[in-house]
Amino acid sequence: MPQRDTTGLVSLAVSTVLHVVVLLIMAMIVNSALTEPRLRPIDVDTVPEPEFEELAEIPVEAFIEPQEPDVEEALIVESALPALEDDDPGLVQTESVSPDAEPAAWDTVAEGLMAGFGSSGTAGPGDRFGGFGGDVGRRLKQAGAKTGDIQVSLAWNNVNDLDVHVVTPRKERIFFAHRLSACRGQLDVDMNAGGPLTQEPVENVFWAHKQAPYGRFHVFVHHFANHGGRDPTAFEVHVLVDGQRQKFSGTVSFRQPPVEVASFEREVPSTIGGDPVDDFRE
Image (cartoon, rainbow, N blue to C red; front, top):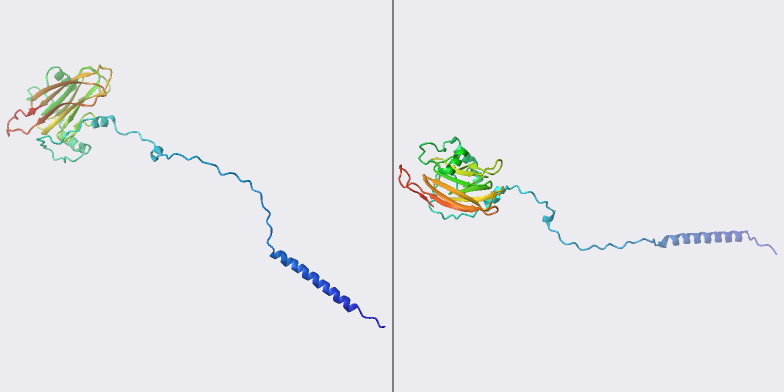
């Protein structure tokens, strides 16, 4: 019986096995690529979210640092004066300054108006108006006070600081922080405000001859500071208008608001070219 040649069969079997193995390997590779990778969870330490207390609303003004006031105490005193009504009769003004202008805007004009006056308002021998006599006249003379068509003088007898305020027909206030008005009124003597103190102080506001305006004036006295004098402090206010003199008296105390002492009107002379009639009315 002839023998079969098995070489071809062996070769075929080996080839078949190799192909199967290769196919299995390829199938495994493809299956691995198509399968989603499994992610291993990572342990993370979580911190609980902090709880915040609800804060009250803070106004914006609380973050703004307050500024030091740049307004001097003099302006505080000025604001404390009673408001004057605008119905005063006979307000006649010889100046061409606008009545709507602020007093601060008049300073330059007023300085020009007062330039060159010098001591022309000083009372002298034979002066028709002559200022005041007696003790107040002596004090004013020693202080170099001046006089004229209108003069308002304050006198008291201790070291406290009293101030005279004169409000002009244009409602411009003459006092220690505004000494010169557009209508030519001037505070030329101010005592016990600082420096040496005296037991015989005076203050003086005046308009030189032929310089005072017409209209209604208001006079206030204010106790600005107590330097050790006894309160209430008695005072006298002497008023001269076109040669006519009047005296007013009263008392004031420290921290008391300014007190209106007198109100008078300077009227237009009724005799043209002659001496004015008695136009000074309390």
